[in-house]
Length: 217
Image (cartoon, rainbow, N blue to C red):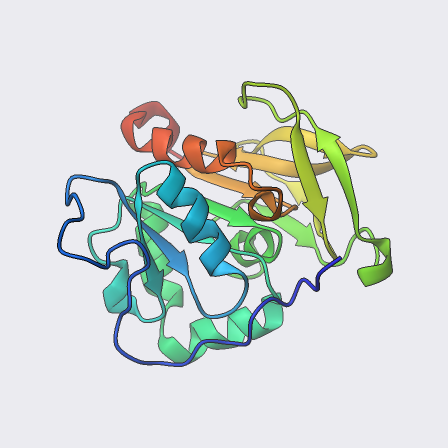
């Protein structure tokens, strides 16, 4: 199985928005940011494209402007934290969440959202909770709110939620541990939906844009 670390950290530079290349793009399509400091952000962009959304790589605060939703992909949470600090992204990301913009965090993205990092999710994620790389696994997982049967969930050096506040709803568990949670418009999962090619969680992200009751924390 592939490493959780994904591609090397992306450097600064001009914006090269995935899915926005070409003059024939429909500007009425949802515009979804994919944090592109580290991790397999291109796989998320491909899934978003299958849903008719435009995806923009986000490396600096200016690239958060005008987004309808945001994905924080898997990768290595320490590397991602350093990148967020280096680029001055922490407070703009918090502001995006406070504004009710739907956010999906996967694997390390779940960790980035927790109380000890961005503080967007009222929960604490335990890193490498299922063990190191050799303990990576796949399973069919029923996730509350996801229609169409179980998701094929790919866990790579995955976290789980160790504790959470009353506003956090647990959507799925493995061995009794929460691995998918939701708080308002913030959805966090411990696995990699992009590796299984299943876009249903990304569909939930897009659907949350039009559900005001879910956007309130």
